[in-house]
Length: 409
Image (cartoon, rainbow, N blue to C red; front, side, top):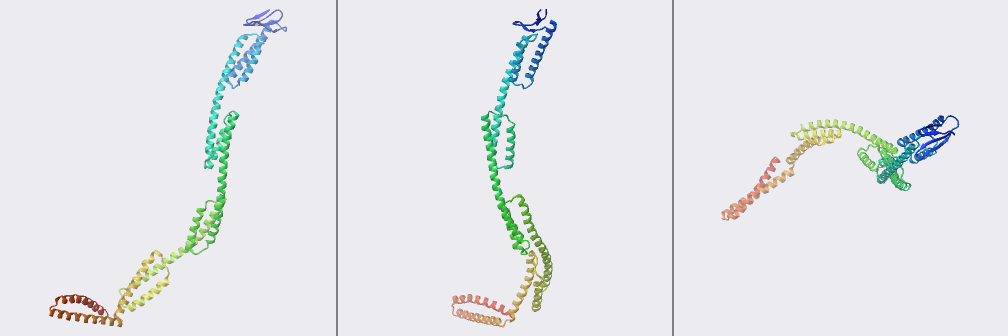
């Protein structure tokens, strides 16, 4: 017979283990000595100790589910309860009981954590839905579309809720995305229609611009190009692939016209500057005729200068008033000289002036006689009245005499 603190082997080869409930039969050993029998069943005990230790570590350090942990505990407990090992089986039962408590505690912790995670996921999905519904009304098509796609990725990374709640939130979320997509599609369809209308308008503008590019009717054509440009801006943008080509054609037609106009204007400006120099030289010559001393010679010289003037052509617009004014001043001086000469040499005018002077002289003489007679008769009032009339007639006579002197007599 052989024994140790936790078991023994009797003379029949039966192996016992000592427990708090008394000795329990472990098994029968007939293949060797009693010491070998105890050693064998003690090794089985050590195996249970190792398995329980490993399970304790898994429960502590891994995410082993409570269900799997309990299954493993039940399996080990069955082995302990079957008493197929020699050792402190009661201590193993205590460790298994503690492990059950630990698993239950972990189960509750996970339940609480899962509930918290679910609440957080629900709140997060609620927030995503609210943001998606706000974005569904946005007209910022690019940024809102990108944000909605980002929200989908965020949604996919969140835990699922219960089927009903998850489906309801997803329905709202999906509806918001669909509403935005529908609005965006309608917007761009309308935009495409507008751009097609713009393309047709700009095709017509380009055709007219190209037809005008060879025109030499500079003023009206330039004005028409300004109108076409205003119409171009008012038409809006065409599709991108058409817009650039149409603009290049439109701008190219204008460039052809304005380049030709600039070339012509440059030549014209150069010619007009040269014309101005020539007219200034003629004005210098004309001004030497003043004051007029020989009317006939001055008139002939001015006529010759004026013929040369008319043959020269246009000068720059801003210089025209000054140079023409110089010639007009000389022309007026000649005209005034002609008028003076005419007054001196016109027989009819001389006769009219002499006749008027004679009439006024007779009237003055008569008034003087009437004044003398009135004073001789003592009628001073009448004499005074006639004296005032005499003053007026005398002033007219003086003027007439002066005019007569201009005729040389």
